[in-house]
Length: 326
Image (tube, rainbow, N blue to C red; front, top):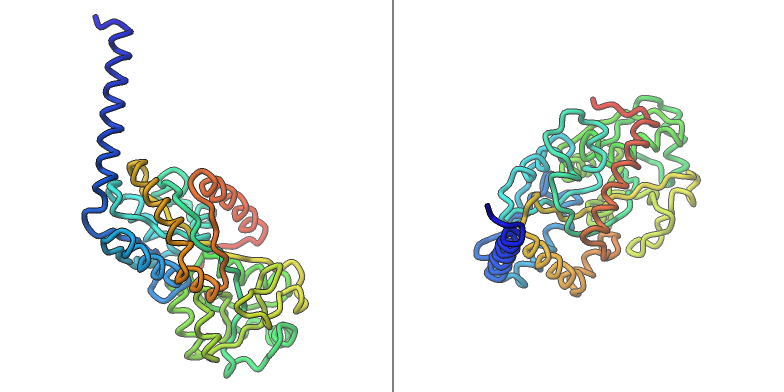
């Protein structure tokens, strides 16, 4: 029989050996390219933050950081794939507020955003914005748009990044607060939705500022209001929804980096350190400001707590709004 003292000593030795192995792995990591799975089509709000960040991390790591777009089912297809990736530090997941909504809308998800991932860091949190195609919608103010929608119930379609996304719920909340009847048209990400909005195939989109900023500056779209408590520095002339006459319309999104469960803690710690450094660089600060976001510093346990709170918050919104998937 091995005595309790010897058993305890052996366990300590094994724990120490494991720690040293992980530390050594973190020191040599990365030895090959790293992949960020983005669960929406290219050109959307997630891309607007993921790609500049990947480019900055390229230079810091000395290895490529690749973006892999895996769109579908409101971002849950990419999330599912990421949850099953090898936890070796070479696959990360760029999740979004949509993934805190999904548990309330998809009863058969084969992953758990809280249990199957390590919450690494909050990356950005831009507000939602109401954008229209100026050739399809004559309204120049939110009040004019609401009046037009009320005069034409059921005749206006609105696009979103997909069923169950913040864009979708922003549209449903807008309908409740404005007492209008708009028809939802889900897309496989904000990128395709914005393309159709610019082309005039859909007249209005409830979008994240990240994917709307560039076409707004180019004059391809018209913004009616930002769904935030205060105006966005990048668009100082754009009123908040409350200023435009729609009280209590406050919807923002967020994007965050996750690692598959069991990714070595030393690698997660290294990534967190590199992220903090990247977020303080001029290119990132400038890109975030252009896209209407601040530069957050919420990592590890604080980010995980935020995600859990978001799951609870959106479950309440889904239930109150009676949102159902098409």
